[in-house]
Length: 365
Image 1 (cartoon, rainbow, N blue to C red):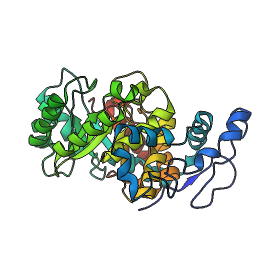
Image 2: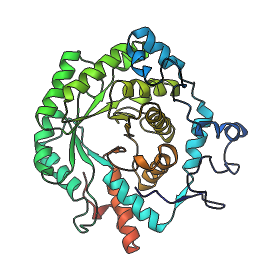
Image 3: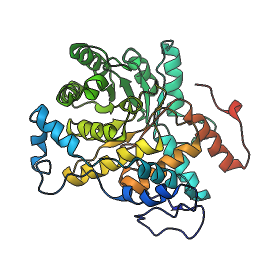
Image 4: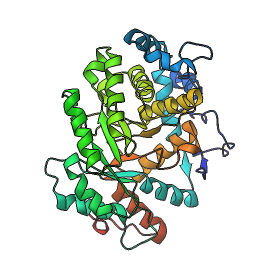
């Protein structure tokens, strides 16, 4: 896997394998400067020899009390340091050759999404065609990772991407609120998988999570994972904007991974606060530390609010500098987006031709 050649905006280039942030150069408060280094540490991994460490990790899900003890035993998140670290990484710049690579990589990581009540088979087929060939004028443009639709639109999406390698993802479990019985949620999942979904994006019961009923959330995720069978990967959506605190996002990340999530995902895109650099950084730390503790790699999907190529590249920097190059692949990192692809295509065209094409040169989703 090729690493993004990332350099600071000012000063000398960092050494390969950067382990500390570049100086904040007066952009942030003295408190941010004080705490920015703290979040570079692997703070979420269970302590060696603890009841949560491997091979006893399974023991933490034995009961509601053991699961609660483990999740609340995770180190608290330093919010100031987390946000300062995310902001500092957002100042990194990449040069022309690396930028071309980053744009193509970002395109290949997009889950091209339509989740509207007005979706039609025709709209989904058009979206699928765009996912397969995002820029018809340039066959070198990579395909997107997937098309994400409601369960009843899976057949149309499968038809549109047949033979291309583009996956079909389906939201399920009473998306986006998740307010339904487990039986209804599992029926939703089975319908999507039976229709041919390669991936299922489920929402957790935020009410149960916020009430501290962690075992209920865990058992629901494991049931959905079982309903996915061996044919579909499971993305677990936390709706981070509704979890209120970074500590809750850390706990939800570990809960989802313990339950067997293939991906952890920030949000549905249907609330006011969706993916942010800070909450994505926190989740990237969690997957990095989960793999260190268990040997199991889990993907991350920020979704909602990522609209520009500049934003996408910043998220790729977060991935590279936090989780590492192993996650710089669409098998392990995705963007949940509907409008991001067009800006990526326009920036790609500008890099190739030296001219900015404008929105009239790309299709409207």
